[in-house]
Image (cartoon, rainbow, N blue to C red; front, side):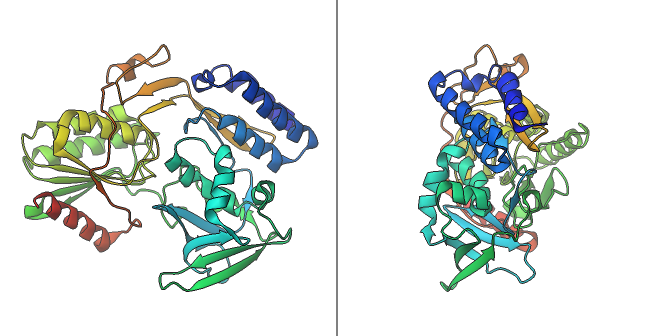
Length: 391
C-alpha cells in the first residue's frame, strides 16, 4: 500500500464530509493537497505526514487533525507544555536528562520554532501548545522547519529551577517510537503512561468542603463512568451547601451526557460555591461540562486555572480514520457545537442540540498554573482553593 492511497482516503472520506472544511478557501486546500501528493509520490513518510498535518490543520478545529504519534520516531525526551513554557519532564535515556524549562533547540529560541510550526498544528493556541511539543523532538520536523543545523544531532538547551543552563546533545539516530513518550490523548502528566485510576476521586476536607477529581469522561465500556457519576452526585447531595472544588485538569473529554446527573446535583444546592480547576489539557466534553455548570450556577461557579484546550465553538463527534500505509490516524469531525451562544446548524445532532446553552466566554476568574501533583501535595492544592472560597 502506498502513501498516495493514504492521501486518497483523506480526500475521499474526510474532506467531503467534515463540516469544518466548509469555510476554507478551495485554492488553499488544493495547494496543501498538491504538497501532500508530491510528498506521497516521493515516498517520504515523514514529509507526507507533515504535509497532511498542514492540510488537516486548515480549519483551525482541534478535533480535526492528523495524529502521527503511532507512526513516527522521536528523540527520547518527554516535553510537556506548562503555562507558557515547555518543560523537560522525563526521558528514555540511559542517563537521566536534565529537567527544567526548554529555552532553545539547536541554538534557536523556542518562540521562533513555535511560530514556524504553527500552521502544522490544529486548533486553538492552547491545543497547539499541547500537541506542538511533538515537533520539537521529531528530527524530520525540525529539519523541515529549518531548525536543524547539524544533520546528525540535536541540541536542547534546558534551564533548571536554580537557573543553571545545560546543553543536552542527542544523536539523531537515537530515536524511540513516539507513542512511548507521547500518548494520543495528551494529558500533561510527566509519566506518559499515566492513566486515571477511576473516574471520580472524592476528598472530604471537613469544614472546608469537598473535592471531586474528574480525570476523564471517556468510558468505552459505558458502565463505569455512569456508576462513578451517580456516586459523586449522591455524595454532593449528602453534603448540601458545602463549598466544592472540581478538578478537570487533564480531562480530555468523552461523553458529557453521562455527566448530567452530577451537574443536576451541583445545581440543587442553594448556596455554597463551586470552584472548577481547568488547564490546557481540558478538552471537548470536559469543556462542555464546565459550560453547562456556568449556565446553571452563574457566579457561584469560580473558574480557576488556565485557558482550556478548546474554545466553546468547535466541530466534533466524527471518529478516527486509519491510514494503513503511514500508520497514522486522522481525527475528523461531523457536528457543529456552539456553547458560547447556544446555536446549532444542520450538522448538530439532536441529542446535543437538546442540551446546548449560551454559556458566554467562560473567562477565568482566577489564573492558576502549576505542574500536576499527586497525593498529599494535591490535597494541599484542594484545601488551599477551598479556603480561598470563603475569603
